[in-house]
Image (tube, rainbow, N blue to C red; front, side, top):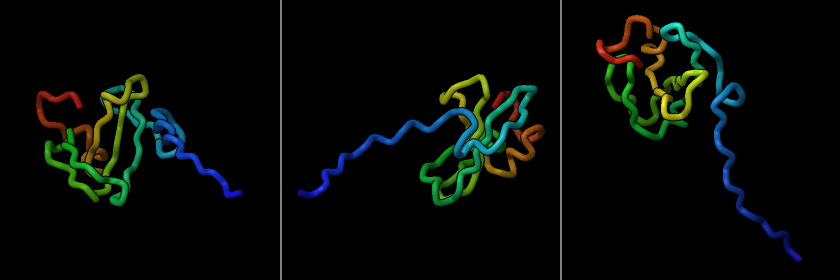
Length: 95
């Protein structure tokens, strides 16, 4: 008799530190989780809050969200914009 395989639903990605959450950094006096996204894993277009330009699919970038926040506060940044986050945000935008 053959083995029966069942498809499992993927586990939700953790918000906190763990696989993929590389580090905790500061933005505006608040701690943020930061995760690096490889080009192979980047499949959608996002708008960077640092420069207000698109992050195209297959572009390595950073994902950051407040330690005391949730998925709705997650933001995708160009890597250079995240490194320069203290001076790279369009006026009138918090993040």
